[in-house]
Length: 124
Image (tube, one colour):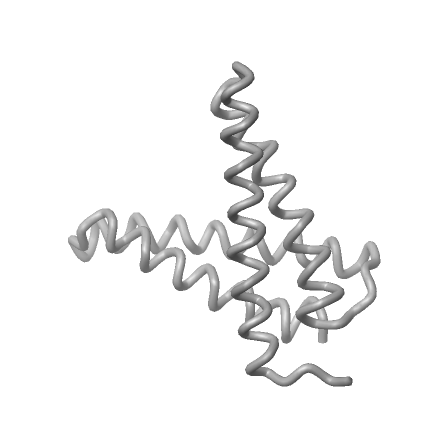
C-alpha cells in the first residue's frame, strides 16, 4: 500500500517527536551518570539519528534500509542542520528577531528541508 503525502507528513512529524524525545532522554540519562555535556549530546543525537533513519525509512517512506540511502540521509540531515544554524543567526543578528523566535524559525526550515529532501532525494 502506497503512503499518501498527508500520511508521510504526519508520520514524519511523529517520528520527529519520538526521536527528539529519545535523544533527550539519552542526553539526560548520560548526564545523570556524570558524563559531560558534549559527550552526552553526541550520544543523544546519534541515537536520535538512528531512530529517525530507521523509522522514516521503513514506516514513513516505506523504503528498505541500505548504505546508499543511509549516506544520503546523513548528508541531508547535516545540510539541514547547517541551514538551521545559518537561519537562526541570520534571523537573530541581521533581521533582529528575538532569539527564541529565531530558533523556532530555524527548526521550521530544518523540518521542511529535511522532509522534502527525504521524500525527493533520499527515498524517491
